[in-house]
Image (cartoon, rainbow, N blue to C red; front, top):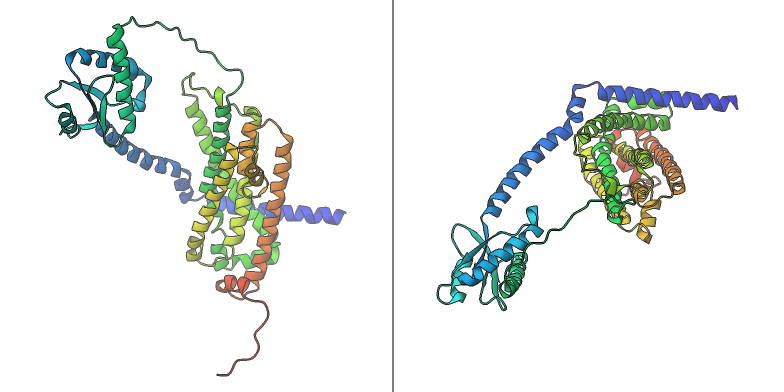
Length: 419
C-alpha cells in the first residue's frame, strides 16, 4: 500500500515538474506577450474593417429613396401615414426616406423613370390610386410592402381626416422568471464561449513535442519519466498558459462590464442553474473541453516530426472543433432531442453541449456525471496517445518514419522477389 502511494506521489511530482517546466518556458518569453495581446490586434483589424464597411453601408443607405407619385390631396395623407408608421422601424430597420412627386402625364412611364433616377438609389416607386396602388421595386420587397402599408394608412386618413394622437403610458416591469429565448441565448453564448476559447488556445498543444523530438529531449524524458506523466505534464502546462490568458482577459472584460449602463442587465438571460453555479460549470466545462481536445491534439501532434506535418494537421483540427461546435449548438437549441443526447454523450462535444444544458435545465446531477465521464476520456486519450508515441516513434528508429510505422501492415516481408 505504501509502495503504491509512493509511486503515485512520484508520478504526480514528475507530472507537475514537466508542467512547471513547459509553463515557464512558454510564459517567460517575449513572444507570449504577443500571444497575450493577440485579441487586441485581431480586434483592431476587425474594428478597422468594420468601420470601413459601416461607412460604405451608411453612405449607400443615405442615398436610398422611396418614391410615391400622387396628386397634392393624396400627398398630405401619404406624408402623414409615413410619419405614423416610420417610428415602428427603429435604427437599421427604418425604411428609406419617402419622396412624394406630383404626377406628370402617364404614371406608368413616370414610375419606371423614377426607378432609374440618377444620383439616388430609388428602391421602390408607387403610383396609381390609394385603394389600388401599383408598386415597382428592384430587389427590396420589404420597401415595397412598406409603400403598400402607408398607402392603406393614407387611405384611412383621407377618409376620416387626421385624428388626435393617442397618449399611451409605458411602464417597464422586470420579469421574475427568465424568458425561454433568454435561456436559449445564454445556452448558445456558453457553447460559443467555450468553442472560441478552445479554438484559440488548444491548437497550440499540437506542436509542443516537435522541438523536443528534434532535439532528442523526449528520449531523455522518456527514459526518466513515464510517457503518461510526460503527456499529462505537458497538457497541464499548456492548460496553465490558457488559464493565465483567460484570467487576464476575464479581469479586463469584467472591468469593462462595470462601465455598462444599469439598463444593460442580463436578467432575461439568467441560466436555469443560477449565475453563480453557471459560472462554476462554465469553468469546469472549459477545463474538460481543453483537456479533451488538448489530449487528442497532443497525441496526434506527437506523431508529427516536422513543422510541415504540424501545419497540415491544423485544418482537420479546426474542422473537428467547428463540427463539435455545430453539434453542440444544435443541441442547445433543442435540449430535449435525441441529437442533444448524442452531443452530451459524445466525449469531444460533451463539454459544449452540457454547458448549454446548464442554461436550459436546473438539474445538477447530470453535470456531475458528465464531468466524471469527460475526465475518464481525458485519461483514455492520454494513455492511448502515450502508447502510440511509444510504439510509433520511440521504437521507430527515426522520427520521420512514425506515421509510416503506425499505419503500415503488420508482419515482415519475406525475401526479395526476383524479376
